[in-house]
Image (cartoon, rainbow, N blue to C red; front, side, top):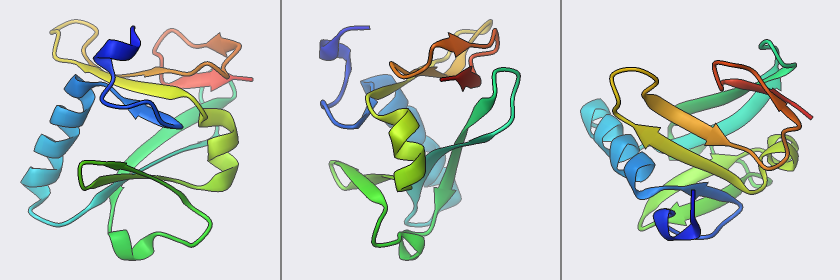
Length: 118
């Protein structure tokens, strides 16, 4: 994936396809929501990715916030240590489609691509 495919160069990066799909999903919620990304213990490689919509009122002072033309991506500081430089992409391919995480901090990734180890 090249920098040209990314919407911006930030601590957490979204490709144009990922941003477009997230905005469509948010529109279906019919609420003003931000996207929280993070990590939690678990998954086949030790840590798994967390991604969910959240009310902007729940953003905490220590959270890292990345703005994409008014849409906010939020990450807690502990998760950010593992996610700095993450690229979130989206594919609508029938086989293997969905969100794809490219994490420069991961030294191993499971086959499903939803968990990693450091």
